[in-house]
Image (cartoon, rainbow, N blue to C red; front, side):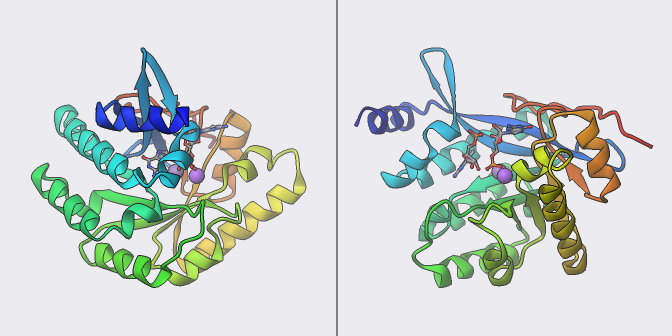
Length: 248
Ligand code: G
Ligand code: G
Ligand code: MN
Ligand code: NA
């Protein structure tokens, strides 16, 4: 359809652009981490990933888009002399392409970006057909020094299953839980149980969708390590340090 063509054209014309959203250390207020988010540039407009990533997956081009985006992001790390960590969303579909991993590793070498500064975020929006293969690639990348986060933890797409199967370093708590936890006790209970789980597994935690100061204060109070959300910084086309107003 029309949308398929829009995605294919954007890929062909390399109109895939990197946006970066800060992830803030809730204890110190420092920003040493950014999440890389894919956007398409079209007629002077910026289209967010939510409007096309499912299509890219279904027509089998998401790995090419992921690769192009990562290449542009690495170039920008170089240009801006960014010294921090980059979280990269990957479709499991990209990871199980056999050349993908070697090419990412080569890109990191080309741009002199140490693998310890890269964390891949895994979400499962669709059924992974070959879990054993995915596991093998995750282990490969871990051995090369890359880290892994589970995105949207608790959403039901990617919860205990990934935690059991893969060596995970970071849990990103489902944004809807964080956003609603102060007004709905049920969500607060979910968040608390995820924090307890993460602590007992010695896995770091990130709270997503922090949209106001009250939620940021609660996140700090709960002992969550990092925060992300519109209150701290929107996705933008450059690496932007933010200064968070932290509760004491
Ligand atoms: O940025 P936005 O809110 O539109 O993101 C919507 C969805 O697209 C999220 O689930 C996010 O994880 C996914 N996404 C964003 N950027 C990328 C990317 O670079 N690669 C892949 N595979 N998914 C992405
Ligand atoms: O699935 P994933 O967590 O990768 O999706 C990330 C997307 O969520 C980002 O691309 C961004 O557009 C969106 N996002 C980031 N911060 C906030 C926030 O504070 N509130 C809401 N509603 N969405 C956010
Ligand atoms: Mn993400
Ligand atoms: Na997420």
